[in-house]
Length: 268
Image (cartoon, rainbow, N blue to C red; front, side):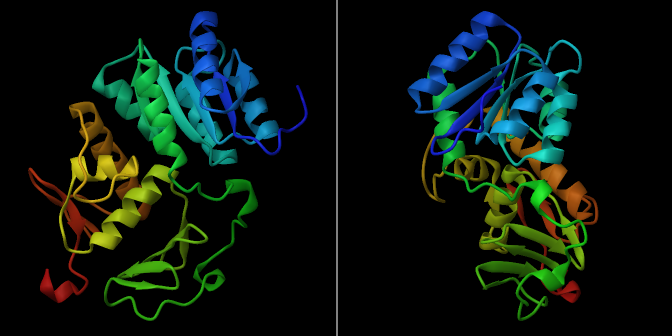
């Protein structure tokens, strides 16, 4: 294994198919990345620890441990964006991939131009802190105080809704005194909802926002893209201890999208 790469964008490609690995290598090199190639999950995990990639591509059917387990292990050590690439196209596989920690899920055979577009969209998103650099005991006392939890407000480059707080600079999310570890995609979705406050955000708007397209912008959003948003929101709710049936923070507007619950319980 070579020394840790500095001064360049790094991508780790975890793929056991030589032809697919070569294609991915070409796409990332054309996008200006230095690539590290791995043929198994364990080899890929070692590469991620050594090189600290911005983006990692991950196949599901790998020798040894499968891609779902690899994604879960990656999330314990790295904030790298994960693009899961697989011939498995069932909705249950997509949901499991996103639940395991992937930011994007593309079905093989994929179009290189679509992959390139997803790469560029991910690069427009800020990355979360490396999980290994965050003390496990960190609490609300480690971030600047918010003025009030009674309303959703912008403050200290952060946002508050009830006892849920999000800091845009440190990318720390807290529920009460408890720190919540979110994937970069989950963080961006929560930030979008906090910014919109009581305005409903459609699934299409949220999907476009992840690509860096502001509200009111246009772009193609497929049904799988919308299902991916549903899965990410479900993961987000689970992590912050929310319920779709009796929401404390995020409510579903059926047939439209999502918005924050009222700030005051008495107005619900």
